[in-house]
Amino acid sequence: MAAMVIVGAGHAAGQAAASLRQEGYDGEIVILGDEAHIPYQRPPLSKQYLSGEHGLERVHLRPAKFYQDKSVSVKTGTRVEAIDVNAKTVTTHAGETIAYAKLLLATGARPRHLTIPGHDLLGIHYLRGIDDVDAIRADMERAKRLVIVGGGYIGLEVAAVAAERGLEVHVLEMEERILARVTTERMSRYYHQLHESRGVHIHTRAAVTAFKGVGHVQGVLCDDVEHPADMVIVGIGVTPNSELAQAAGIDCANGVLVDDHCRTSAPDVFAAGDCTNHPNPLLGRRLRLESVPNAMEQARVAAANMCGGNKVYSSIPWFWSDQFELKLQMVGFSADGDTEVVRGDMASNCFAVFYLKDGAVVAVDAVNSPKEFMICKQLIGRQVDAAMLADPEADLKALLKR
Image 1 (tube, rainbow, N blue to C red):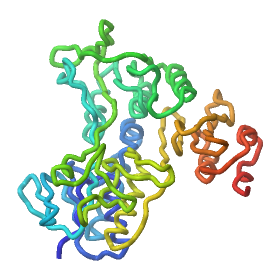
Image 2 (cartoon, rainbow, N blue to C red; image 1 turned 60 degrees about the vertical axis):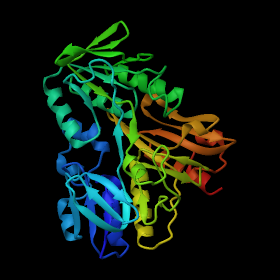
Image 3 (cartoon, one colour; image 1 turned 90 degrees about the horizontal axis):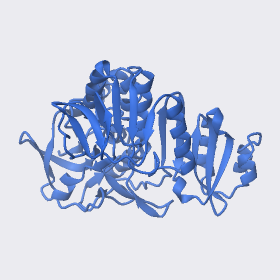
Image 4 (cartoon, helix red, strand yellow; image 1 turned 135 degrees about the vertical axis):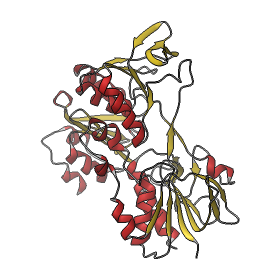
């Protein structure tokens, strides 16, 4: 009997295997991952794992014993080279051919690379997997000056960890502000000031043109300005790993195209996680998300439907970021709003910014405000009293009863 085959070994893969068993599937499940690790969590990599607060066991999505107990075969160090959607097989780099009853593509994404002069110098890192962070940690032991290329969440999370370790940190962002692609000017200013108050040097409108050094990186050039560096971390976004699907004739466009059941254009082939471009019926548009909640929920939906179910994926996206002692929790997209309402004092590092469109809540950014975040998740799409939102003394739960 052909197996349920999962290509990839990240959040979506680990959750899909668990969900297949929860759905009652008792046949063979095979996870094929090209890394040397069983499925693990990526968010702690740039935070608690990088800082040393969490060891490898804390990063694993589930312990190795889980897969043994559930009779899930996890083949690490195994790269899938081809999919034959007609024969319903996958072929690995070692030449092994595995037949599938249903196939789940959970291939994730990979960092975008800079191919400017000096890009191949030692000491230049990208952060995506455990091995990447192990190499970064080793370099941090002897480095004094770190340059981070890219002022997104990953870059800022690393900057926070490095600054707390005593490194001199410079963040180079080519846009006019950090976090320009993911949040508002107000939140960009807040995080800019936060990092500079903790000793991080942020440079905007700083487009990197070359890396300088002999064998090992010694500096980062932005035209004629040089930033000395003992090590560099590049965080300029990711690219979905959709080439495998595309080569198999599966429809792709900025990721693997799926419907609201996580089905691809090929029979019995599903996809979940960062590699997917999926429809969101609540927002009325297609999205490709790099988010753990998205990967986990899509995996559950895909697993149910791989077992013959009829489950629809329909969820408002949410995210989080840990920087210094602050936890930012976000739901929805702030860019969808036309009005901002601040609740609490931003200077206190405990506040929430609500985003409304035509009087209805569409998103929130909550810093050290888990209560506001949880309530906002329930307020999405509801008309609200902006004055009540702004009043820290007002009980937001009352808005849920209207």
